[in-house]
Image (cartoon, rainbow, N blue to C red; front, top):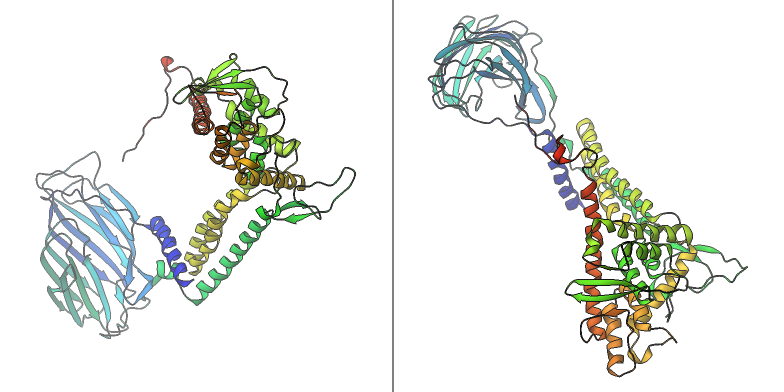
Length: 607
């Protein structure tokens, strides 16, 4: 459990990292640019507020630029306490250019720094230009430092990695309220190279030179302990994986308990969805006699509960039973209905060649369900024959969705085989799963940043991930639906197990052809065809003419042709729907030949 929790914590941490990741800057600084001189004059008052006058000369050489930008750090990590930021309060009071370069200033807060962007977008300068920035900073003092015992003014004049151009010379002067006891200066990327430092009375001077891009300079001036009043550092919460999603006994225990609760609720839902209403006290598949009532309860129908049935459920079409089996009308249910209509004499299917079939209408008095009536009327809306190629045209776009809709309406509203719409229940369950997942991310962020309990957000995420695939099983059958399902399962058992010498022929009925659509929805069409291939070889069976193929067409060959036809029918019906969608996607406007825009497009922005 702990290992799984840690893995999920890492996944959750990635989400936080994406949300809080800083923005990187592109490095397009010309190599000729440099800073010949950077000078900082600092005056520190008795309250620890440092007033800094920063003078820098910037050499643009022969590569014109708009001006410099300066980043002043406003927060800093604390080595011995990763849960806090040491804050440096900075306020810029003046920006100017003694050489007359554009000094328009844009100040923004970015990545823990105050970014001062100097210059004008419409103007470029070259050669050596001078700039002056005046600002105040609070937070550069370490009162009564545990090692030195002094009040230390400790400032990274040049932050390590902070400048993109080399600096030839750095000069710093520090003036404090009392005499300075000690000084130090360091440079380099790790601040480990000594540089010049000296002091006299209340003043100290520092100097360093030859800094490459990325090098830093640190200056330290030690004042007697107690010099600065109210200069204690200010800290704020620093958020990271360790404190937003800490893995400890409290967070693991709370997350585990909430996850167990959520999983338990989902498993209860799953159990509820797997149990349908049934007639209590009756053998599965039987209904109470007319005029008699039977108690209704909940149970789960299994294959062991059903008895073999030698005929399909009476009063039920193959497409309707297909919906009853898996709670939804799909392409297989529609194509099985088409095969069933052909076997019952409503039209003839003629195989023209590879992946090509023709449907020719026949006259028959056989009744049809609403879905079957829609299929026949749509197939032959343009005449008495149609090919699978023609079915790809948008004129037939209503064939598939219309049949599926009528199958579901018939099963739910007319036959009352379900307690409400399974599709609605499944959509609601899926939306709940999605809300749990996104809600868990939001809850984890809120609890993580507010209380350090981000791991708790994993509980609804795990619950949602478990619920999502189970949502497709939502929906409950009525007792009547369960009775028909038991009959269908019994008939499926017969189709799966019957051998050639066990086939029950009915007078006037081509058993193979009439039951082939049922074998299709049960997934046993090839086995059913194999049984009748043996009967054909023995001369005990002769198929009807509802399907006509080129040359000799035995039952096994017919089975393979049915597989191809089923795939082509599904493909054609989907293609017609797509064609209709494409043709109506832009009809809210005028024709493309009239102008006014069209489909798609690109966009962007500038600075």
